[in-house]
Length: 471
Image 1 (cartoon, rainbow, N blue to C red):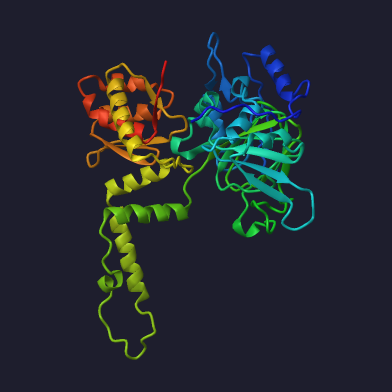
Image 2: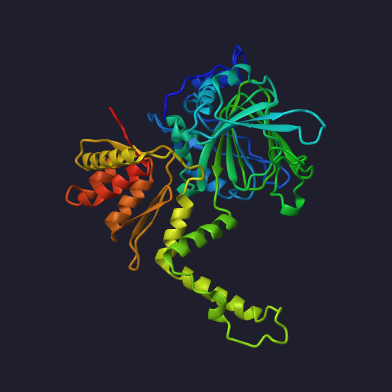
């Protein structure tokens, strides 16, 4: 990752005092408490305003922690209804400036885009999308209204965003897709739309008005604007819709397929979007086919195997014995899925594969140098002279060992098989918890067995799932 330069948005951020600055002053006066929301009766026609602070800080404690009571309460709404959290995050996560985000949008290693809304009735011209990476000059004349810059995977660059994710640890690692950060001028947004996954929307700067529907939209209820460069609904359905305004520190949770539309009310509006994504059925079936065709010889002609020979002279064009074919196909699929080791392997790799991959290709010489460097770093780590850590944004999960299968560790779509036993299950559990430094994994394994892990850490380094921390 190359260093980048902060780029200017002209005079867009020169307001004397923003709502974010006001929030900062507010937080300094109330640095050890978080305001509770007013309780709103649970009603499908009303937005639930959360009655508990999401985070809490004990006396003489510098670290914000999850409020277990709040999590228990929230899980009753999770994946069922939208929830509004008021003033739930402190300022330390919101120090990223629009200029820094613009600099990231100039990098080729990040997916970025600008969405611009044109208030016209001309078909196909209301919404435009411009894809990054952008040039420095682009942001010197950034539109003063109705425009939004969006950058994916910002947790890979900004440590405070990576830290923000620790407060979503009540959700499985593999559910969290990425953190997207947006900057919008007045009136900016991406239009009324639907996400096929749950999302947490956290206001960092300025204010944003949200118009949302309180229940998921069915497929046959979708009404999209035609000929647009992005999928935009004609409007939010008028039944069961509500409005709310998010200020810095506020968070809105939306279940999958709840229509929503965010509109910036300021020229300094920044919003985090934490997406909780799972593979679609289509992706799962394609991945399953790819995995099992690699593991099993499936070249055998299927119909010859399941159908007896018969005479078709009287009606050669007819496809016969449909129920026999279907029954045999289901039998073959059940047989493939009955292999526990292969099923676990397929599922673990699928759930941890990043959606946006780093496709940088190395030359043959670079690969040789990289192999040697990774070997030295892995040995150095287990000897205690090198500090390694997980790459920001890496996805890790594991399946504990059993009598039948070994412990299986999955990192960024790659499977690593460990020996059976509680020690290796504990290692995998610690490795997947990003709050635990890797040095504790090393201490857990001890010196006697560390040689078995040099190859594992070498592979993790080559796959860019680990990085070398220099002093």
